[in-house]
Length: 111
Length: 113
Image 1: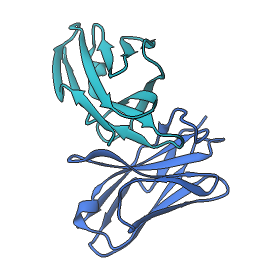
Image 2: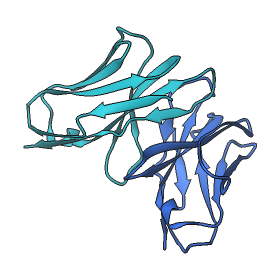
Image 3: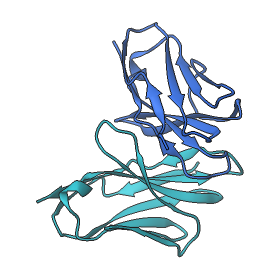
C-alpha cells in the first residue's frame, strides 16, 4: 500500500530561523510529488510539483527538493505569514488523478 | 481565471439524512476530484470524474457517490449520513486526468448531528 509520512508533525520557528520539512514515501510508480500549503478553514493552495529525483523548485522563501525516497521543503528566513500546514501528496499508478496525502506539518513562525 | 468554487460552504445535517455538495471547476478543466478531510484521517481521496465518467474511486462506502455534468461541474452525494461523515469536503480540478496539478476549492464544511 502506498504510504506518505511527513515529519515533524509540528514545528515552531522564530522569524528568520530556517528549517526543513520532510516527506518520505513508499510507493510504486511515482508519477509526481506535490506540495501544498493549507491555512485554517481553507482549501490547500498549490506550491510545487516535482517529477523526478534531483529536481528542485523554488518560490520566494520556499524550496522543494526530491530524492528517490523523500522530499524536503526548505523554508529560508521564514516570516509569520509562512505559518500554515504544509501538505505533501504523491500521484501514483498508471492513470488518473488520485493523490495520496501525508498527515501534514503544522508550522508556526513567531515574530 | 476564477478558481474552484464549492457550494454550500457550510452545512448542518442530522443522522440519516442525505446531502448533495456542488463543485464548479476552473474554466477549461475537465477533471474533478473529491477529497474528505478530517482531523483523524487527514485528506483522503473519494473519487475522480473526467468527461462525465468516474476514473478512480477511493475506499469509501457506497453511500458516497458523485457525478459530473457536461459542463464539468460535479456533485457528490452522501446518503444516510453518519456522525463520522462530519468533515471538510474538498473538490480539486485539473485540466486533464493525466497527473497535472490539482487546484483545490475552499471546501464545504459538513457537520452531522
